[in-house]
Image (tube, rainbow, N blue to C red; front, side, top):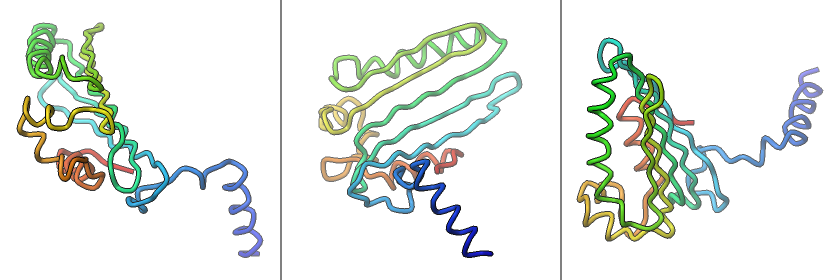
Length: 159
């Protein structure tokens, strides 16, 4: 009976295509894999932050990163102030190709989205405008494990 159930599970995975999506148990896969790191934190009363980082990688090297950070609060003054701070932070990246960011304030949510194509972006320029990028850029690439470890150290869970 167990063999029969395993056979059915195996066939259902093959039919639905679940085996085509790589997991992070194989960080050095030569196929492109997608890793998602996400979390939710209450940073103070009436302020929560939802984060999601979608990382596409190949052979252990990050290809693209799409980050979405949503700050929710009823305190519009706090949200406006935080929006200004985030805009200042990201302004140093405005002239870098293949580094896109967008910040919007809708209702009670401040939404920050960033997309970085690490295969095409000028990594040296990233490190010039913000030396903190040297923590993740090693040997002209961004390592998947390094990025996952960083996000997990900030309280996110990665698949």
